[in-house]
Image 1 (tube, rainbow, N blue to C red):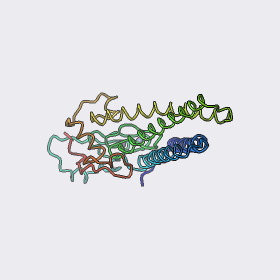
Image 2 (image 1 turned 180 degrees about the vertical axis):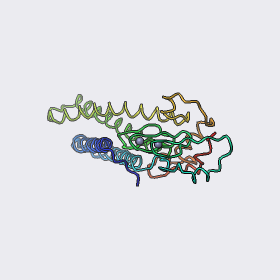
Image 3 (image 1 turned 45 degrees about the vertical axis):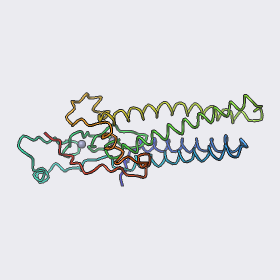
Length: 260
Ligand SMILES: [Zn+2]
Ligand SMILES: [Zn+2]
């Protein structure tokens, strides 16, 4: 099993889980159940819990999936000979983890490994976002954005209801909790939807954030948006794209095929 023993990352991952559970608790036990409207509470409670469950499942998959680590210490003479390089082909090796670096791989200081198509190291999932776990990371940002939006709508409805009818019976603690929940929802909605947008853009254009920042020249073949999406979410297109339980079928591409 893949797991990065990084104290800061583990702390951030625990905070993420705590925030989702805290939101779930306040939504269910402060807002929905005391509302007295059985149908409204049941439908919203089920939708919210399902989205929260999918967000946490995506988080687990993103954290515990190997993002595409290059085997450590494979820069040996035997391995290089087994690649049967043509004359003129050049290999890059990473001095930090003694591995042969496939094209588009980058070394991560936290993971202490070279990661294929590394996008960035995210402390919130305590892992790198790379070739093999990008789908789970994108789903995580999407489901957190959706639960944040749902929270904001529910808080909005709650206060709207208070304007129409008298809510003087609700305690100041409840009001403070709901205002804090609304602010947290807004903050997370902005942050995760921006992250989701930039991730989708980088998938569609097949350019990782590191490549965008370093303004690297494109050495890889340009493909259509649809092909790029299928490379991350799996093919063919199905409901499995939105499921953190479906491992994307990425084919068996040779990571050393692009070396020139
Ligand atoms: Zn390395
Ligand atoms: Zn990393």
